[in-house]
Amino acid sequence: MTTVTVELQGLDKLVNKLGHVTDPFGDLVKEAAEYGKKEMKVFALPHPGKDKGTLAEAATYELTGRGVDMTARIGLIGRGHGMRSSLAGLAPVVNYGRRPGKPPPFKAMQRWLKSHGINRSPREVQKIIAAQGTKGIYFLEKTEAALNKALPKMLAESIKRAESAWGK
Image 1 (cartoon, rainbow, N blue to C red):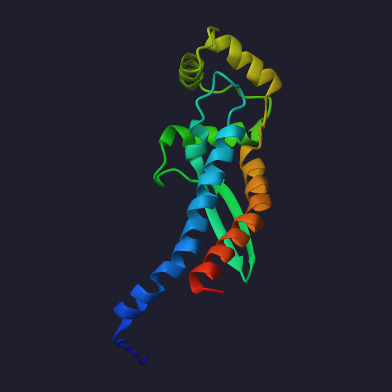
Image 2: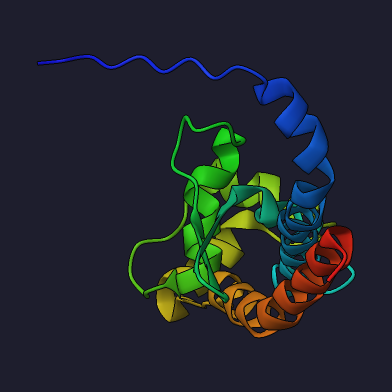
């Protein structure tokens, strides 16, 4: 195997000269991330006034693009990937729902009821969930759709900023 090393002289001058050009696209990534975070906070609140919006912490964003097309994919971060471990199991259940059958763990139900200010018996709520299941709110899919709808406009604005930086 052959290793090739390339040394560029004057790269610092080129980076300084072109530095302002990368800013419009750096802004695009920031803008998309902020937009996604804002939308997810809205979609991840199935109980308005009671939920905290922390489910948004369980998501990861991936922006990909080719040419002038950009798309976003949003998914759940797995356990041990920088997110609060309590959300690793909860976020998928809230997003996709829970089939009837086995009740949720008592301690988890107790913590959830307390943190949401709901004064009901954890056992009573467990029985209801075991009998009926829960309906998913699909906050991941809704956020992804909203972000993909907004990306073309964000990208067009970034292109305009880049063109004005180049003097076109």
